[in-house]
Image (tube, rainbow, N blue to C red; front, side, top):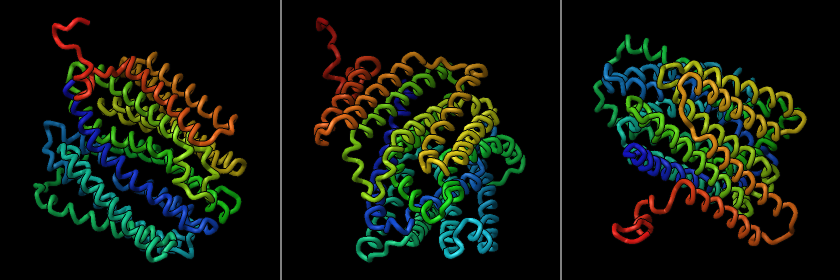
Length: 490
């Protein structure tokens, strides 16, 4: 119970910063989609370039974020030595990357379709290099259980980024995608400065033998990370390369990329849960009740992600206005992408059985299988159905990885997940979503009426949660009113 309370507290801190940060970042979606010209495809260009940077970030960090947790919790290693060795690896990879980009920017920009704008790629290369260098100190803050500093730096970046975007787009009228990348570069460089004092406090020591052990552990995580990030961004990378018309592809990718932003609430929840859950799982690996803990954490994760799904879909008549009218053609992909994110979160929860027994190669194979499914669907169907192939490909890819991880994990390291309860929650959530869609499609009622109906469905789901798994008496503060006092009749 103490670990669950710790998980809840840290998730609240990480989650609050993540959710508030993403919510503030939503200000950029209407800013870009209302101010950025639709016909130029600039938002699609932004979506495409950021997809490349996400992939490169995984390559540069080389799975060392999880590796840092694994070896910093090892009694044989000193945490500062682990941190120093990891930083040496990531720093070396980052230096080689920057030399390659600046040395061969001409051929690279031509191959990616940015012959006239190599400056886009140069700016984002520096951004992703700084992000890679920041990733390890951020991970070390999580290991040290310093969520406040972690959250403060993340929030500072977001607030600064939003303020500069408002200045450039609204006050100065600079609506080109160039300024999106330029502002990101300024903000990332500024946040990097805050880690310099912490680096001087570290007792730096490089351990070659430790590095050898780390590589044995991290290279499957790298493969896992590559396959995992491709599941998230391969569609956005492939779309302009596969779609017959590059100019139209940028415009359509802008529609898809902007609408997908609404679905990112699920990514927020998963990320917040991961930040808090990962350190606790490694620390709890020696406890006798660990399997019950993992099973309970999975159940509550699924319950609350399904609730988030219903809330977003129920409030879609309002949330759609986050996106500029010209960009709303892709709104139909939102529930598909949100469900894909739920599957991804479940897959993340399932992944610990092989991480804890140092068999991360399984994760690499599972993610690779999902990635193959996603890429195949994209290649076959993008020319036929456009960005709908991206949405369905992501759903199929995550479902594949999740299913493989579950069945193999139950054989290798079984955990008693409450599958009956989980399946019932999925059925109830999908039934309520189906009713929301039926009223939206088959009636011409005003939006406010639909909102009332949708909220009734959402409250019905909440009632089931309270009735079955989270009675009000178990909640802090509120629960005092519902607990029976000793001696009082029932």
